[in-house]
Image (tube, rainbow, N blue to C red; front, side, top):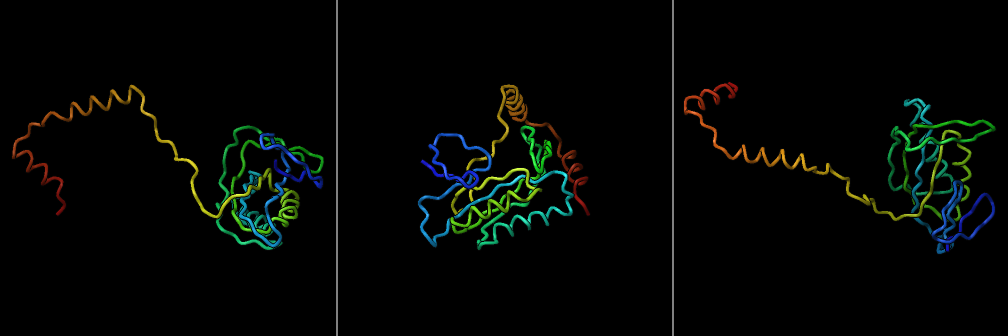
Length: 186
């Protein structure tokens, strides 16, 4: 079982239940005065001009830092095409997002301060969506980036190139010397 804070109401959720947007993880095993490592991933509105993007990221970092946090690492937001269209309601109006700037910040913070940080991030109208997860301090890539998968056609072309490259090229010594002289820069 995992405890989450939905708005101001604490709710117990089974591990395999799906979580809805706006839920905050309440760390049950965190002791008083103990810090944990968290990572917040965020999507910023794509209409933000690139020259003011750093200002928006600084606002997010200030929201995290407000109650005391030690920053570990971060990735500056990059513009991405979203996998699906997101509709966000803010102040009675809806906005539709097909692209957004994605970035993240990893930090260490007292678990009791996560709720106030969540409220501050929720109030930031530049943020389309965000998620806070408990993690560890190590930076690692959880998977290897896939490379191109060989198709049967690719394998056949490569095999034919290998076979053709095994045949020696007939060239005279004079032709070889002439080719070398053309390649040498004086």
